[in-house]
Length: 373
Image (cartoon, rainbow, N blue to C red; front, side, top):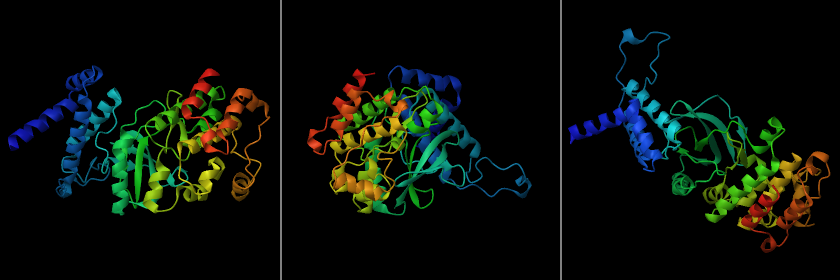
């Protein structure tokens, strides 16, 4: 048995470190055989085993300043590094994400401070396997020491991992051993969110971005997933210029883990301006509420301003939404009018209908936007 295990390890090592063998795996994958996922999983398991073998104490003669080991805490750091590079190359050539989704030991943070913050999370830049840039979303109210929280996120892993759409941010996995919070891992998007993207690319077609986000949300709804927090901060732009939705389903998970209503968490986090009135009143997130928030995100993208930008206080916005039944007034700025046709404005108004059942579906929204592109 031991010799068989050693032989399998040698085969895996050869497959991931020999160019011709790796290319054979890539060719099989491109031909429709999902072998790359198997090798990715096997490589990740081998990395875990190598991390679990304690490193021997280094002799005094080896402790030279300026020549640290690449992985001083790992017994066979050279072999570990070879596996890392092999898996990164496999990922780069095939595009497959990590197969094993608990990424403890494979992720490191870069920098001392978070680079951004959201409604219920802080965003850090990190590296997967020492090379691949990833976004690490640290959930403020979800502690990694909470077994219920870990179990809840592990239950979502298969669902999130199974989502495959050009307009949905891929999900790599979670990390539970980077400090006191659970971190969600996804590929880093250099273009940032849609607002950052259009500032850097003044010629960007905003209707194309709006359409891409709508396609992503329609796809989520087809998989029975409610986003719960649609806004421009949660619409990223991929390297090829496509709108890509992130943070989907998080409001429901946070609600269950923290035992606080999604609406309370989102309102406290500054998302009231995008929320459907029924959510602010305490009702559960729905696809109809997503349709409402998506129209607010469209308004935000076209104007480059938060919804109800003329109203400074969130409390006043909430009063206007819930008590006065207000909806946004049509913006008249020249730059906005370039994108905001009468037909699109009429659609947005339908999306903000006070009766949730009277709002269009995301399929209808996506189809309409496609017709005006």
